[in-house]
Length: 440
Ligand code: HEC
Ligand SMILES: [Cu+2]
Image 1 (cartoon, rainbow, N blue to C red):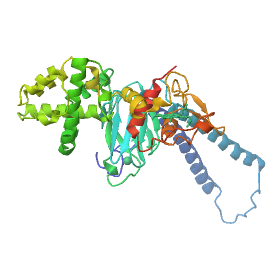
Image 2: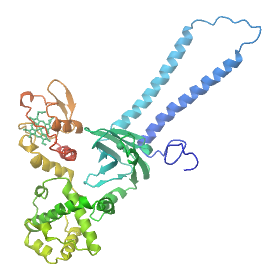
Image 3: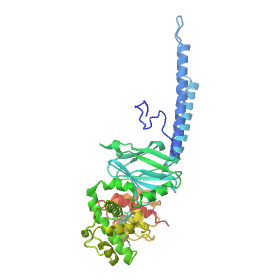
Image 4: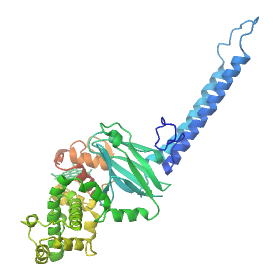
């Protein structure tokens, strides 16, 4: 940046920042339109004012005459013209606003979590990153929630700014038109390190996004290593969960085959991440020549014969090299390289952890509560005559405050318990992802 430190933009420009999205073009068009109208009237009024001051200034010997009291013609002119101008501004801005507010139905959805003091982005395959990567020329929908206080997602180059409020989902969408890297800020003062809440959005070339996501979410991701391995305390616990999970996985997949892995775990969303961390740290240790073998890590876990041999053969860690090799090989099902699948996690919560299936169905037949088949996006009539559309916020509220909005016909049977404190926000995300797949 050269010379003009007062300009707030990181690129130190005088005029607007890069316009890198379809939204930016819309917003800038409206902005320019209003701006040039203002410039026009400013110039006109200042010119007339100066002109009248000079032309009709008081000269010696002149008699001051009474000015006309009112003129209908002038009143009408200076009322009608501004009304038309303001009407046109409204029409132009409203049209742009509608385009910016309603995301296309095929938009690519990325979940955003704002928390003190960072942004986290969760991709459809479960990968979580602190940088927002998006495909270019494709509508992207951000579904955002906050872990703590109000934050605001702000991408100047996209002219996008949307508050992220605890306890509800907010949405914003955009379609990037330029590839490259742009700034993301938090635009709502959210405490001590608010100013650290900055990151980047990277708009990829065609095909580049998919490649990035595949590489990022594979086991040896450098992003994951850098972020998480310098937290040894957190890692110690994770190693145990992760290794147990590997053992369970191998038992089920190599020997009996195919049993749902998720059901072997208590928590749903974390373990696959933990597992990745474990494997990465193990692998790093091995590469550094450290011994990582600790038989205690496997106590109490029933291992299949082949796994046991694999694990016990070499107490120096050769077995884990083997294990990691296996995990990195083609034999590895998608599941592991992908991290927790939100839809699968949601299904798991529906059937097991949350026990929703004891009252709800997914086949269209009502049970104790209404069926979930095709509910997402539907209009729902409520007790008390109100109507709502089943969206993220309604589902979330139905789970946390079931009696706040009772489905019509369930007045005396609104028996759903609250899940407040029992399900985390991330688990609600997963449930919603699952409900969305239940189309008719
Ligand atoms: C004890 C039975 C019971 C359990 C368990 C239960 N629900 Fe419900 N649920 C109901 C009933 C009854 C209603 C309808 C009355 C109302 O709206 O509160 C309902 C309504 C809903 C609605 C609104 C449905 C619509 O068609 O508008 C959603 C969403 C929902 N439940 C989600 C869940 C989820 C998710 C779980 C599991 C985490 C769950 N429920 C567990 C009984 C239950
Ligand atoms: Cu913030």
